[in-house]
Image (cartoon, rainbow, N blue to C red; front, top):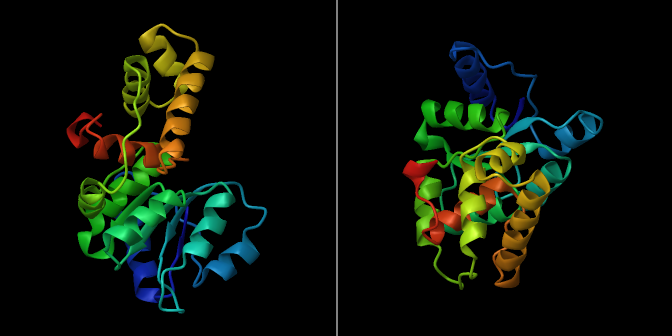
Length: 211
């Protein structure tokens, strides 16, 4: 895991928090910019990246976020920006979660642990942005598709979903592909698990307490 943030104080704080976590969370040296990270880590295996959305250019670096996500990293956006559109756009681009810096240490550490386990995490400000996003239509999901979707949110793998519902992993994947296709068809693409969680919460398919 690593941090991309142009403020040394933030990098130091995250390092200390990870060291003090129980158990401690290993952290690689951080980077001051997206370009620095991309140049140094082109061959690095995918991992978890804590990403400051607004760096030296003083505007949201959605392009850089997309580049880091495209490398296969699970990206936690960690930013002082807290607008609904910024949060939702980050999720659309593939960030696994969005934590506002003022939400503090505990939410970031919980988000990191979830990302390391390839599980979704929804912080308070992200939850509000999701609930406020009612601008476009809802796809019509079949009961079985909803059942598979909820089971996937609550387990670690498609294999476990198959065991729970007594269906094959291939069938699980097929249902999830159909769900994603239906969301894309109404203009609400959900390319990642976290994005699907956001859509499901928006549409009342699942609630935060169920995760």
